[in-house]
Amino acid sequence: MTEIHAGAYCYSNLGYTNLALDNAQTIREWVVTIAEQMAVTIINGPTVVSFKDYGLPDAGLSVFAIIAESHICCHTWPESNFIRIDIVSCKSFDISKIRGITERLFNIKAWEEQSL
Image (spheres, rainbow, N blue to C red):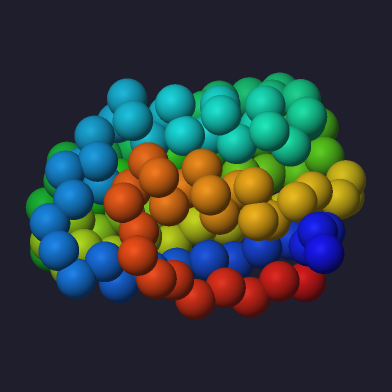
């Protein structure tokens, strides 16, 4: 059975060091790949912000893209090996495909998911 959702909030405590969590190009490419899989239109972005510039503890990256259908964003905390993904769209999408892409890119073994 295909899982179709209008929104997904996923997060994972990876439990190991993952350099992709601190790589702006990888995170940017993740957004583009997800948008392509969802067949949505990116209107603005993807924009990557590094919080290391602000001297915050466990600072990582945030990336976001405004899509015609809503938004895609990802926040990372590399020192804690933690990632949070927010995808919201008025267009239905297959979360299992998004999960597969994300698990491969970030080498995620387990994650928690909430869907709207």
